[in-house]
Image (cartoon, rainbow over all chains, first blue to last red; front, top):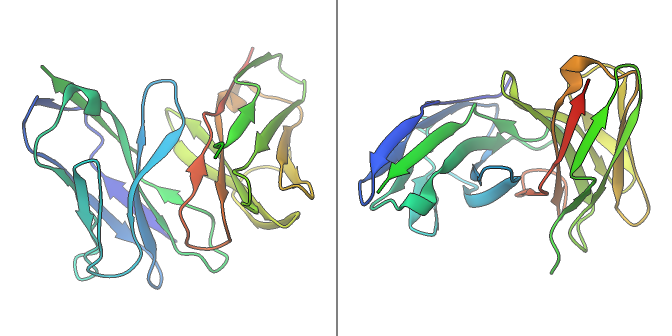
Length: 113
Length: 113
């Protein structure tokens, strides 16, 4: 079945540091890929998405590129802020009757001033 | 445009009781999915409804059920509650079925004592 693997952390960085959160996946066919962010006590917010190979999703300074050859969708940001502290989830959707979104375990990101 | 609304935000129930959670999707969205989030298991897909029909179901016991109304609002019900049902229950709405992005509500925090 489908699966998503991401580092769980916590990942601790200083403000203005470069961020990479790795995400790799296993899926049948050509899934859509997503990054969601969850702030304490809140639901999930869609951060960015990519629907086909080589697509780059971007939002709020975050970027991720759909790499079919390496089955990866790594999240990057050039300069993180304290307000980026949250849990980040990589997810995929195979569609076509598959079981909803398949999520990774989530990466807890802590940004120190 | 209003987001996904889940009610109630918090619930405390006793083992053996049943509970009903409600979700109002984004206006115009016809697909509603439910997820359970726990520290141990992460985010797990419960079921998806589209046009009042259950389209997909995750690997949960029959105590977990749901329905969708003609206005796309959805409810999920858990009968004979167990301690292990304590979790954050998240509802997500999508415009259509399949590989489109899902928008999440803030969740209902269920505690079973």
